[in-house]
Image 1 (cartoon, rainbow, N blue to C red):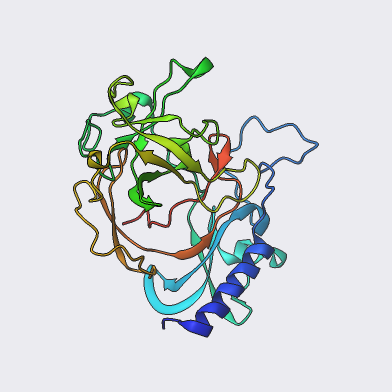
Image 2: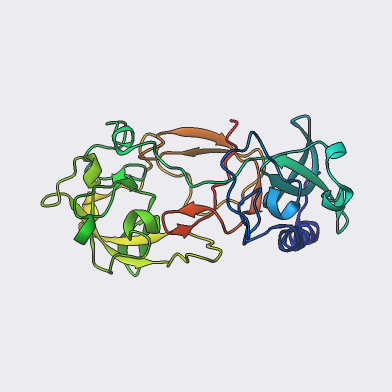
Length: 299
Protein backbone atom coordinates (compact mmCIF):
# COMPACT_ATOMS: atom_id res chain seq x y z
CA UNK A 1 0.00 0.00 0.00
CA UNK A 2 1.63 3.22 -1.15
CA UNK A 3 0.56 6.59 0.19
CA UNK A 4 0.18 9.81 -1.73
CA UNK A 5 -1.13 13.28 -1.04
CA UNK A 6 -3.00 13.58 2.25
CA UNK A 7 -2.09 10.07 3.44
CA UNK A 8 1.61 10.66 2.93
CA UNK A 9 1.39 14.07 4.63
CA UNK A 10 -0.34 12.50 7.66
CA UNK A 11 2.30 9.78 7.87
CA UNK A 12 5.05 12.39 7.61
CA UNK A 13 3.47 14.43 10.41
CA UNK A 14 3.20 11.32 12.59
CA UNK A 15 6.82 10.44 11.86
CA UNK A 16 7.95 13.90 12.92
CA UNK A 17 5.98 13.60 16.16
CA UNK A 18 7.55 10.19 16.83
CA UNK A 19 11.02 11.64 16.26
CA UNK A 20 10.33 14.42 18.76
CA UNK A 21 9.05 11.93 21.34
CA UNK A 22 11.49 9.04 21.02
CA UNK A 23 14.76 10.50 19.68
CA UNK A 24 17.17 11.68 22.33
CA UNK A 25 19.49 14.42 21.08
CA UNK A 26 21.69 14.60 24.19
CA UNK A 27 22.55 10.97 24.77
CA UNK A 28 24.87 10.10 27.66
CA UNK A 29 27.27 7.13 27.42
CA UNK A 30 25.66 3.77 28.08
CA UNK A 31 26.01 1.98 31.39
CA UNK A 32 27.28 4.74 33.64
CA UNK A 33 25.52 7.73 35.16
CA UNK A 34 26.95 11.23 35.13
CA UNK A 35 28.17 10.80 38.71
CA UNK A 36 29.88 7.45 38.05
CA UNK A 37 33.30 6.68 36.64
CA UNK A 38 33.22 4.72 33.34
CA UNK A 39 33.38 0.97 33.74
CA UNK A 40 36.70 -0.56 32.73
CA UNK A 41 35.05 -3.59 31.06
CA UNK A 42 31.59 -4.47 29.80
CA UNK A 43 31.03 -7.95 28.32
CA UNK A 44 27.96 -6.75 26.42
CA UNK A 45 25.30 -4.21 27.31
CA UNK A 46 22.23 -2.95 25.48
CA UNK A 47 19.74 -0.46 26.85
CA UNK A 48 16.05 -0.94 26.15
CA UNK A 49 15.23 2.68 26.97
CA UNK A 50 14.10 4.40 23.77
CA UNK A 51 16.19 7.48 24.54
CA UNK A 52 19.31 5.28 24.59
CA UNK A 53 18.38 2.80 21.87
CA UNK A 54 16.48 4.67 19.14
CA UNK A 55 18.91 6.22 16.64
CA UNK A 56 16.54 7.23 13.85
CA UNK A 57 12.87 7.56 12.90
CA UNK A 58 11.69 7.18 9.33
CA UNK A 59 8.93 6.08 6.99
CA UNK A 60 8.68 3.06 4.73
CA UNK A 61 6.96 -0.28 4.16
CA UNK A 62 6.66 -2.60 7.15
CA UNK A 63 9.00 -5.59 7.03
CA UNK A 64 8.18 -9.03 8.40
CA UNK A 65 11.19 -11.37 8.41
CA UNK A 66 12.82 -9.05 5.84
CA UNK A 67 9.78 -9.36 3.57
CA UNK A 68 8.26 -6.12 2.30
CA UNK A 69 4.56 -6.17 3.22
CA UNK A 70 3.85 -3.03 1.20
CA UNK A 71 2.07 -1.40 4.15
CA UNK A 72 3.50 2.02 4.96
CA UNK A 73 4.50 2.55 8.57
CA UNK A 74 6.66 4.56 10.96
CA UNK A 75 10.08 2.97 11.39
CA UNK A 76 12.16 3.07 14.55
CA UNK A 77 15.86 2.41 13.88
CA UNK A 78 17.59 1.06 16.98
CA UNK A 79 21.12 0.17 18.06
CA UNK A 80 19.95 -3.21 19.31
CA UNK A 81 16.68 -5.00 18.60
CA UNK A 82 15.83 -6.66 21.90
CA UNK A 83 13.11 -9.32 22.18
CA UNK A 84 9.91 -7.94 23.64
CA UNK A 85 9.86 -10.37 26.57
CA UNK A 86 13.12 -8.87 27.84
CA UNK A 87 11.90 -5.26 27.76
CA UNK A 88 10.11 -3.63 30.68
CA UNK A 89 6.61 -2.44 29.76
CA UNK A 90 7.62 1.19 30.31
CA UNK A 91 10.33 0.94 27.64
CA UNK A 92 8.37 -0.79 24.86
CA UNK A 93 8.04 1.13 21.63
CA UNK A 94 4.40 1.40 20.51
CA UNK A 95 2.96 -1.04 17.96
CA UNK A 96 0.95 1.86 16.56
CA UNK A 97 1.60 5.58 16.70
CA UNK A 98 -1.00 8.20 15.79
CA UNK A 99 -2.96 5.63 13.80
CA UNK A 100 -0.03 4.13 11.86
CA UNK A 101 1.66 0.80 12.43
CA UNK A 102 5.29 0.86 13.47
CA UNK A 103 8.32 -1.27 12.71
CA UNK A 104 11.54 -1.71 14.67
CA UNK A 105 14.69 -2.19 12.57
CA UNK A 106 18.15 -2.84 13.98
CA UNK A 107 20.54 -0.48 12.21
CA UNK A 108 23.27 0.00 14.81
CA UNK A 109 24.63 3.47 15.45
CA UNK A 110 24.98 5.80 12.49
CA UNK A 111 28.46 7.06 11.64
CA UNK A 112 29.78 9.12 8.77
CA UNK A 113 31.94 6.89 6.56
CA UNK A 114 35.57 6.97 7.70
CA UNK A 115 38.36 5.51 5.55
CA UNK A 116 40.51 3.14 7.58
CA UNK A 117 43.63 5.18 6.89
CA UNK A 118 45.05 7.68 4.44
CA UNK A 119 47.00 4.85 2.82
CA UNK A 120 43.88 2.76 2.20
CA UNK A 121 41.93 5.84 1.09
CA UNK A 122 44.60 6.65 -1.50
CA UNK A 123 44.34 3.36 -3.36
CA UNK A 124 44.80 4.70 -6.88
CA UNK A 125 41.30 3.55 -7.77
CA UNK A 126 38.88 4.78 -10.40
CA UNK A 127 38.25 8.51 -10.28
CA UNK A 128 41.38 9.37 -8.30
CA UNK A 129 43.49 10.40 -11.28
CA UNK A 130 43.78 13.82 -12.96
CA UNK A 131 40.84 14.19 -15.33
CA UNK A 132 40.08 16.89 -17.88
CA UNK A 133 37.29 17.46 -18.26
CA UNK A 134 36.65 16.52 -14.64
CA UNK A 135 33.40 14.65 -13.96
CA UNK A 136 31.13 14.07 -10.97
CA UNK A 137 32.44 11.07 -9.05
CA UNK A 138 36.11 11.96 -9.41
CA UNK A 139 38.59 13.29 -6.84
CA UNK A 140 38.57 16.93 -5.72
CA UNK A 141 39.67 18.72 -2.58
CA UNK A 142 41.14 21.72 -0.81
CA UNK A 143 44.60 22.49 0.59
CA UNK A 144 45.24 22.47 4.33
CA UNK A 145 47.02 25.53 5.70
CA UNK A 146 48.62 26.69 8.95
CA UNK A 147 49.32 23.99 11.51
CA UNK A 148 47.75 21.38 9.21
CA UNK A 149 49.79 22.29 6.13
CA UNK A 150 51.51 18.89 6.25
CA UNK A 151 48.16 17.08 5.76
CA UNK A 152 46.57 16.06 2.46
CA UNK A 153 42.96 15.28 1.61
CA UNK A 154 40.61 14.33 -1.21
CA UNK A 155 36.86 13.90 -1.57
CA UNK A 156 34.21 13.45 -4.24
CA UNK A 157 33.09 15.88 -6.97
CA UNK A 158 29.31 15.69 -6.52
CA UNK A 159 27.73 17.43 -9.52
CA UNK A 160 27.98 20.32 -11.97
CA UNK A 161 25.42 23.03 -11.21
CA UNK A 162 24.70 26.44 -12.71
CA UNK A 163 23.69 29.79 -11.23
CA UNK A 164 23.80 33.26 -12.75
CA UNK A 165 25.40 31.95 -15.93
CA UNK A 166 28.35 30.41 -14.03
CA UNK A 167 29.30 26.75 -13.55
CA UNK A 168 29.97 25.35 -10.09
CA UNK A 169 31.17 22.12 -8.56
CA UNK A 170 28.71 20.91 -5.93
CA UNK A 171 30.13 18.77 -3.17
CA UNK A 172 30.16 18.55 0.62
CA UNK A 173 31.13 21.34 2.99
CA UNK A 174 33.72 18.97 4.45
CA UNK A 175 35.18 18.36 0.97
CA UNK A 176 35.27 21.93 -0.33
CA UNK A 177 35.25 24.11 2.80
CA UNK A 178 36.91 21.99 5.53
CA UNK A 179 33.82 22.11 7.76
CA UNK A 180 33.38 25.91 7.66
CA UNK A 181 37.11 26.64 8.12
CA UNK A 182 38.01 27.90 4.64
CA UNK A 183 37.22 31.41 3.35
CA UNK A 184 35.35 32.03 0.11
CA UNK A 185 37.85 32.09 -2.75
CA UNK A 186 39.96 29.19 -1.44
CA UNK A 187 41.38 27.04 -4.28
CA UNK A 188 39.87 23.65 -5.13
CA UNK A 189 42.00 21.04 -6.89
CA UNK A 190 41.34 18.08 -9.17
CA UNK A 191 42.55 15.58 -8.27
CA UNK A 192 42.66 16.25 -4.54
CA UNK A 193 46.17 16.65 -3.21
CA UNK A 194 45.94 13.28 -1.43
CA UNK A 195 45.56 11.74 -4.90
CA UNK A 196 48.82 13.29 -6.10
CA UNK A 197 47.21 16.51 -7.28
CA UNK A 198 49.64 19.39 -7.81
CA UNK A 199 48.73 22.65 -6.04
CA UNK A 200 50.65 24.64 -8.68
CA UNK A 201 48.95 23.04 -11.70
CA UNK A 202 45.65 21.42 -10.74
CA UNK A 203 43.38 24.18 -9.39
CA UNK A 204 40.04 23.76 -11.10
CA UNK A 205 37.71 25.97 -9.03
CA UNK A 206 37.47 28.35 -6.08
CA UNK A 207 35.15 28.08 -3.08
CA UNK A 208 32.08 30.25 -3.71
CA UNK A 209 29.48 29.40 -1.07
CA UNK A 210 28.88 26.96 1.77
CA UNK A 211 26.04 25.99 4.08
CA UNK A 212 27.61 26.18 7.56
CA UNK A 213 27.71 22.99 9.64
CA UNK A 214 26.61 23.39 13.25
CA UNK A 215 28.56 21.49 15.87
CA UNK A 216 25.72 20.84 18.33
CA UNK A 217 22.55 21.05 16.30
CA UNK A 218 20.78 19.11 13.58
CA UNK A 219 22.32 19.62 10.12
CA UNK A 220 20.00 18.88 7.21
CA UNK A 221 22.67 19.26 4.51
CA UNK A 222 26.45 19.08 4.18
CA UNK A 223 27.19 21.04 1.02
CA UNK A 224 29.21 23.74 -0.66
CA UNK A 225 29.85 24.97 -4.19
CA UNK A 226 33.03 26.06 -5.92
CA UNK A 227 33.09 28.27 -9.03
CA UNK A 228 34.67 26.53 -12.03
CA UNK A 229 37.56 28.54 -13.47
CA UNK A 230 37.35 27.15 -17.04
CA UNK A 231 33.97 25.89 -18.36
CA UNK A 232 35.74 23.37 -20.60
CA UNK A 233 37.44 21.75 -17.62
CA UNK A 234 34.26 20.02 -16.37
CA UNK A 235 31.70 17.61 -17.83
CA UNK A 236 28.34 17.07 -16.05
CA UNK A 237 28.17 13.36 -16.95
CA UNK A 238 28.85 11.10 -13.95
CA UNK A 239 32.15 9.23 -14.21
CA UNK A 240 31.65 5.54 -15.13
CA UNK A 241 27.84 6.01 -15.09
CA UNK A 242 27.12 8.57 -17.80
CA UNK A 243 24.86 11.59 -18.32
CA UNK A 244 21.67 12.09 -16.33
CA UNK A 245 18.46 11.29 -18.19
CA UNK A 246 16.95 14.56 -16.97
CA UNK A 247 17.91 17.64 -15.02
CA UNK A 248 14.66 17.40 -13.03
CA UNK A 249 14.70 15.74 -9.58
CA UNK A 250 12.73 12.52 -9.11
CA UNK A 251 10.86 11.82 -5.85
CA UNK A 252 12.45 8.98 -3.88
CA UNK A 253 10.50 5.74 -3.56
CA UNK A 254 11.26 2.68 -1.48
CA UNK A 255 12.90 -0.06 -3.62
CA UNK A 256 13.90 2.49 -6.26
CA UNK A 257 17.21 1.43 -7.78
CA UNK A 258 19.90 4.10 -7.53
CA UNK A 259 23.53 4.43 -8.59
CA UNK A 260 26.41 6.36 -7.09
CA UNK A 261 30.04 7.00 -7.88
CA UNK A 262 32.43 8.10 -5.17
CA UNK A 263 36.12 8.93 -5.13
CA UNK A 264 36.62 6.73 -2.05
CA UNK A 265 33.70 4.29 -2.27
CA UNK A 266 33.78 3.78 -6.10
CA UNK A 267 30.72 2.78 -8.21
CA UNK A 268 27.77 1.20 -6.42
CA UNK A 269 24.25 0.16 -7.29
CA UNK A 270 21.82 0.40 -4.38
CA UNK A 271 18.18 0.09 -3.51
CA UNK A 272 16.40 2.87 -1.66
CA UNK A 273 15.49 1.36 1.72
CA UNK A 274 13.87 4.28 3.54
CA UNK A 275 13.00 7.91 3.01
CA UNK A 276 12.38 10.95 5.17
CA UNK A 277 14.54 9.43 7.90
CA UNK A 278 15.53 11.69 10.77
CA UNK A 279 18.70 10.57 12.57
CA UNK A 280 19.76 11.93 15.94
CA UNK A 281 22.14 14.86 16.34
CA UNK A 282 24.99 12.72 17.61
CA UNK A 283 26.45 11.55 14.29
CA UNK A 284 30.08 12.62 14.30
CA UNK A 285 31.86 14.01 11.26
CA UNK A 286 34.99 15.78 12.37
CA UNK A 287 33.80 18.61 14.59
CA UNK A 288 30.31 18.65 13.10
CA UNK A 289 27.43 16.20 12.83
CA UNK A 290 25.73 15.20 9.59
CA UNK A 291 22.92 12.85 8.52
CA UNK A 292 23.64 9.35 7.27
CA UNK A 293 22.74 8.76 3.59
CA UNK A 294 19.61 6.73 2.94
CA UNK A 295 21.14 3.60 1.41
CA UNK A 296 20.45 0.08 2.56
CA UNK A 297 23.86 -1.28 3.73
CA UNK A 298 22.62 -4.84 3.13
CA UNK A 299 22.31 -4.46 -0.66
